[in-house]
Length: 423
Image (cartoon, rainbow, N blue to C red):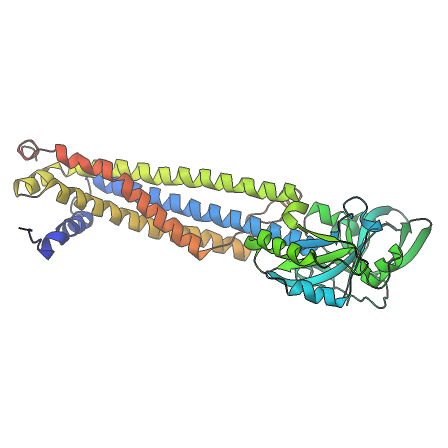
């Protein structure tokens, strides 16, 4: 015969836990400070985890977007361009751009042409890479990096010789927007062009700020002796960075039966392959995150275990009375697990408030600054991800309750006859 459990019996541990948790009659008890310490431990642990994850996400996405802003997600070049990029252009027309944009995972395609040159003023000179882009070039990232002036309307049919330089270059050569300067390009002979500075950008990425200038693709084509349909390559922007490898495979499948107009084969390269050092550094940040998460969860678990042990020992007389009245060990253990869950819940609430507040303050004020030469950003970037925030809460709650199973078993060793002798 199956014994029927009364619904009230199932709520007895919860009822007792609430009474114990809300008991504030004797503030001299040891348990009250222990509860506060356990709550603070959980709150600090969760707040640190939220800030840590937000900082790492902010770093990864900010730096990834900066690299992609100049290098795109996928670059298509002549298969021999790795050995001599200027001598091995691709020959394509507008139909190829449409072809690439129809590839699954690709949102935009744009041409570019590179030319190496020297910027010269009356007092100094600087070697640069001149990147020519056309009217289809996506300038949203560059707009966010402009510190002075504005971007020109890039053209592939004519030019007024505009140039966009970095703040690093402008400081070295003592330039400002509106200034005119000469640029020299050495091939079989020396060519000289006079440019007008239309804007100054700053990305804090040394590899770009030290070298990269932008102008019309018409200019760089003429400097490289390219035909109207020739360019150094095509840049593709992906819909989803997490599917970058899959998108590259789709692009490769499209390129295989479609060489350029001269029959030369083209090959794609992802941004992670072009800049392996940067993305390897970002991957190392994930290891730091796991270490910090483990330490903070250990902190929360340790404070909860020590706090619950103190509470159980202090409530030994109550446990003895409950056992004398017929309460089972499992019922009493569940009571203290519920009690621990109340402490954890309050700690999670405080931790969320503290962690989210720190992230919000940093996002709005940029209070924490960094050395851009080392970290590529001038202030600590933070990004709050709601699914990850919920996952942190669930994992912290689950692990913290799980570690309380061991101290809750202490009630099995408390005997009513012994515990009820003492006041």
